Each structure stands twice: as C-alpha cells, then as structure tokens.
Length: 409
Image (cartoon, rainbow, N blue to C red; front, side):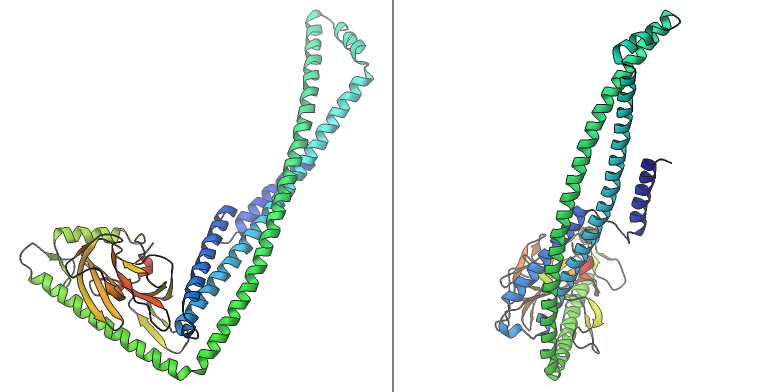
C-alpha cells in the first residue's frame, strides 16, 4: 500500500470514528451557530425582564426563577460552544489529513516529471527522436512511435498543469485551515466570556437563595397561600366549564353530540373546529405578544425553592413585559369573562377544547364573542409594586388540563 493510499484509509477511518462517536443527533457548524444564537436571544430576553422588575421583586421566588432560567440558557450556550469547538477540531484533523494527501501527490507528480525530463535529456531530444522513429521495422511502427512521442510530450504538459493545480490546492487548503483556526480562537474567547457570566449569575442566584432562606417561614406561608389560590381558581374554572357543558346538553335548537359521556355536546361546526384545534398540536401561536419566559411549569413538581413541597399547576405561568397583551391561540368563542383576584380571566372554547387566560387587568372581549387566531383578548396585569407581569395560561379538553408547552409552537 502506498503512502497516499494509507493516508486516504486513515482519513476514511477518522470520518467514520467521528460519525460513530458523535452522541445522538449531529449538527453542522451553521446549525450549532443558529441554536447558539437562539439561546443568546433567550438570555437577552430574560435579562430585559429582570431589568424591568423593580427592586422589590428581587429576592422573590419569581425573580429567582428567572435567574435560574438565565443560568440554564447560559449553560446551553456553553454546551453549544463546546460542540462547535469539538467540530472545528474534527474538521482541522480531516483538513490536516487532506493536506498531507495533497502534498504527497504533489511530491509524486514532481518526481515523475523530473524523471521524464532526465530521460529526455539523456536521449538528446531531437536527434534521439528521429533515430527512434526511423529505426522502426516498418512504416506503421514508425507512425506508432511518432504518435507515442507526441502523447509523451502531451503527458509532460499535463504533469506541469497538475503540479500547478496541486500547488494552488495546497495554498487554498492552508488558507482554509488558518481561517478555521481563527474561528476556533474566537469561539474559545466566547466560551471564556460565557463562563465568566455564568459564574456571576450563579453567585447572584446563591445570594438570592440565601436571602430567601432567611425568610423561609414567610415564604412557606406565601407558598401555601398560593396553593390555596390555585385550588380556588381551579374550582372556579371547573364550575364555569361544567355550566357550559350543562348548557350544551340542554340546547335543542340545533343537533349536538358529545365525544365522551358527560362531555360538551358539539354542533357539526364545533366538532370540525375541535378536530382542527387538535390537528394543530405543537403549532399553535404563543398566548401573548412580545418577549417572555415560562417561570412555572405545568403539572405536579417540586417547588423550585422549597424542595420538600410539591406544587401542582393546571397550566403555565409566563412572565413578560409591562403592557403586553394576551392573544387567542386559535379561533373560537368566548364562553366566560370572569373576575379573579388580580383582575380578569377569559375562557375561549374551540369545540371541546378550551384555552384559558388568567391575570388580565382589562379585557377587550365579552361572553359570546367570536375571536380569530392572534386576536387580542386583553392587557396582562402588572403588579404595581414588583413590576412583574405574569399570565397564567391553560389548555383543557373538556375538564382535563393539558400541558400547554406541548401544544404551542
């Protein structure tokens, strides 16, 4: 096996090793860069929300939640930077092998060309050519020798062209490697900056956690109070839904049918709307405009501060900027506009699916209104002291709460 072939085999095995050892899904540098850009935009959005809340909001559970989200996003950026750097190292390794192949091929072609020149020199060019042609046994062989000499001369010209091409290829590959090394140095600097910022944010998180820990008793009372408020809100929503279901079964003006026993009895139009809503799972728009962060997840989970406490939520809580408006995520009919502790709530029905928007300071719709996708429903309430603007959002099928994050785009 020649040196060139050995290098080619080594390159193939290197590429194979890279593919086999890449955990999970592999991404290109462009894809990793795009994902890092998205993560940085998340960080910038969260930072704006942190800046907009007042001093009173600091050392609060919501503020701590935002900082925790910021730290997670920062770690994601560092992880993506590590992936980009690793991919660049792999590319440099492959480029080094390709450069070695080009240099080996260039040496081989130069050697052949020099040998051919030496052979021509030994045979004294023109005199040797004529002797070589005329010494043939017959005319046919003389023509063959003439053609051979012509082809040999053309081969020499091609050798020169290939040598020049290989030299240019080597220069391009060296320039590409230099550019890649520079890109790697930039990414290393970015990673160092992100690590420093992460360290600062973790210090802030630690400090706020300590401050919260000092008033643990008060916070435990707040957590318990919030749980009771959530349970009360859930009962209020369930009563409103139950009344809506009961009304649908008593309506004999049009043909209605429920999908399940005890469910909402739908008209044909509502059934189609329900099916369309279900078909858009994972593609529905967000229930508000502008920047946001989800600060409380759906379902049953440990409290982010009081680990011994389990909290349960029928929806998600989204912190956003003051003045932000809630918007319908799908076309439907407003079935309830009701009063809650911090303002108003709105329920929009989409067949036997419902979307619920809680914590509005004012509403733009009334019961019975038909709304379209992204139609504004009201302004989200901003706490006058903390400056926090938080929307509680739910998706339900009949009375059953669903995880909104699985439905939203």
